[in-house]
Image 1 (cartoon, rainbow, N blue to C red):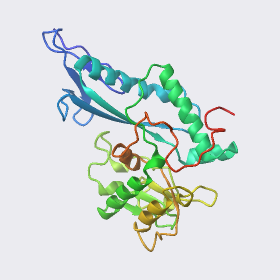
Image 2 (tube, helix red, strand yellow):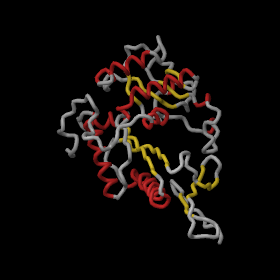
Image 3 (cartoon, rainbow, N blue to C red):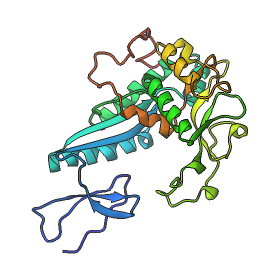
Length: 287
């Protein structure tokens, strides 16, 4: 029996075993090796999947939720086809520049605007039959972990505060030898990261891990985590980044990846973060 030609998809999961249809194995495309390989769990009987969810800036459309359907198929195949206990974490980027801009344009609090579209996204995914994630952490619920990770990156020479005094922190792409290896790209051939003023960067391709607060934007000083977050931020790079300087989180992959380590289960009674005093009006219905 010839090996079937693999399908091109975001996630390639192909069940096939040479010479036998009764014995089915799970094979996935490995981006690093450019090969289809047998899936072998790190822990027998279990599998973990982490995916970056949507930035809740507006109503979701089919292009937005396509990723969730692809991973839902993979998850179901692991559970039903292979009996694996799957933990799937899908984060929510509930604050970023686009959310702040669009909420201001619509004269709505940023958190109300974000929550409205978080609920719309969840409803759309359930309508498509996508299973709820095991955990669904919000970016704003993990500021302390983000700061800790950024501190570590700075200490190891992989990140640095902006040189223009804006309060931004960037990942230094040239500090990581394997940067671009998965996509087989050279740094010099990459486009500049258009996520912040390039004047504060060492290299235009460096991307933001953290963004300094602008006068019209919310800051950690207004959040329940303000004391812990402000104290941690102050240790990042004094005196260039003083403790008195507030900051808002960015949507970078490096920062968002900390969400997988400490999360809140989706079955919690309320989606509202502990300690937040959020009015119900404007959060769950369009308007």
